[in-house]
Image 1 (tube, rainbow, N blue to C red):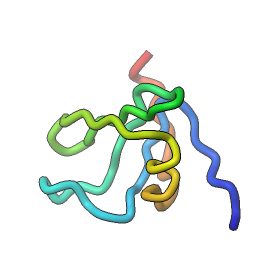
Image 2 (cartoon, rainbow, N blue to C red):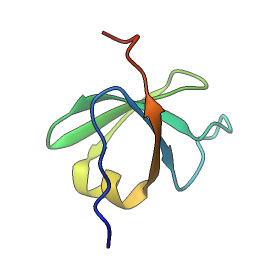
Image 3 (cartoon, rainbow, N blue to C red):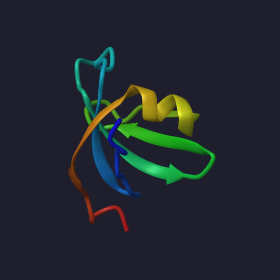
Image 4 (cartoon, rainbow, N blue to C red):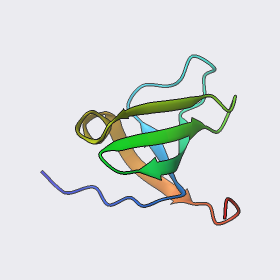
Length: 67
């Protein structure tokens, strides 16, 4: 299985959409846990890195405005 490369402030697509029908998430914290923010409604979700790597589909882009 190919390793998925992602970094802080990347916009990622998950396998399942958020209830607000948006499938784009911005990574706002990385460590043992990953915190990401929905690009549609602004909801923040935290999950263990292992679970995140299973649920992530692909990296869409990078957002530098969050600095």
